[in-house]
Length: 81
Image (cartoon, rainbow, N blue to C red):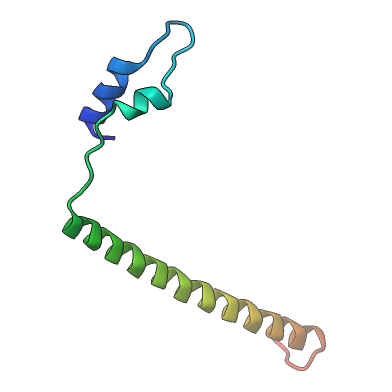
């Protein structure tokens, strides 16, 4: 969390025993967002990561299916070690 955002929150927190930071405080807080080109680059990286995760999940499912098949063959003694 950038220091600017933390400082804004610290200045607006009320209360001593039970700290309070609610929607009214949030409306007064400045939130700095990355530029649109930077957001697009971040989105591209995240999309690539999602694609990689999907590929790995498919590979994992295929390996699990292969393992089940091999275990079945071992249990029925179609193949021996």
